[in-house]
Length: 156
Image 1 (cartoon, one colour):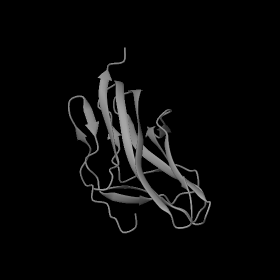
Image 2: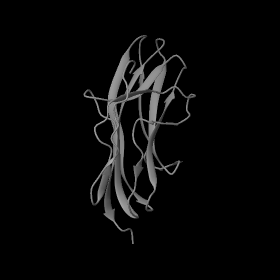
Image 3: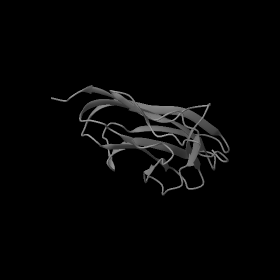
């Protein structure tokens, strides 16, 4: 989203058995190489406070626009733990349509994952499609992007 600025100065919120990002307002253009994940730096990294099985979920508000009739552009998202993709956390949104057609939606995943204490969980995304295609992740009153985790068990 062109013109949006980051206004998320708060650190992640945390309770006894949960941690989450707060309401965020930002725009992040996916400007990396086609198909190469980049961290959505405006979404604070979550630190898992203690080991065990956690239910982790995220939503990503994406927007896409196409450079030409019949082109296809996708946004792929995933969560990373300590810099490594969490298998099963991937989500995708995409469009194929006429020139100038744009599309926005909010998508994500919910899954169980075993974490160690102090693991670092971050949201990543990438654009897949022709270079002139515009793709971004944003968060605001028209759609929120965020990550949350809730402790489920000690993971015996």
